[in-house]
Length: 305
Image (cartoon, rainbow, N blue to C red; front, side):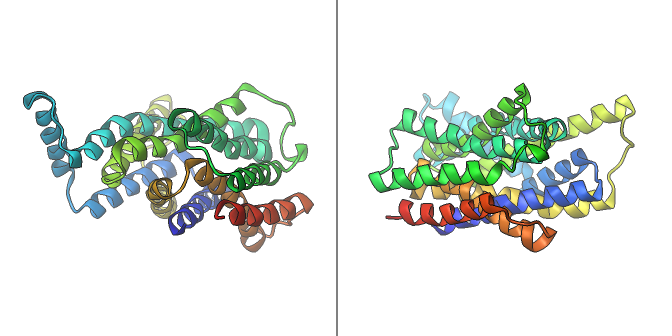
């Protein structure tokens, strides 16, 4: 359960730092690029190998696949799936951010944040349909309470958004749900033994996507060349918590039922952000947020029974 708790803490920290970024008026693509580059550096540091050695590992796997009758040693399974799952997930991670940024601009924080948190329903449903990971009776009750807590806690009312549904909100739901589901795919197929290698590819590809986005803005003349010191100063801690959010989530998926993990992950993040909003930004908790916090507590008790 400690892995799931730490994943919630890191996920909440990502949202807090992004809010600080918006408050300071920093260019989001610059912050996100530094964030992904930091995550890549952390992955390489943890693995104790350089970029060349990582691609050397890729070469060894490919030689096993094509030169030895397709026999892949068990310990190389995580490496192979790290590449196969990491590349598309890196693109999805980046697109999820871009879609969310657009939704915030068009629909406000409350409505957009609600659809993003409800994205946990997608990996929960897919895990049950694909791998048959059905929870126990009391855990079903805990999951229902957790999902309700996310819904109540994330939607603040029409006063913070337009109050109407737009297609970009559906994209927010799908993109965030698939981003979370990617960790489950790798944990199931790759075993989670080489999760740092998987995350290297995820954040490496996401970094390349963000750089391409920045270059595009430079060519269009909508942004100046270079990175501001403020973007770097905020992007580094953002990259750390962003990386470890996934780093802790993967082993949690191996320890607990996926539907339990995703429901607690979503509800816990909403609850922690509510508390942080009060403590750090002077926000007030209305009755809906208080109800969400109490429901999260009840859900955590039920899913552990």
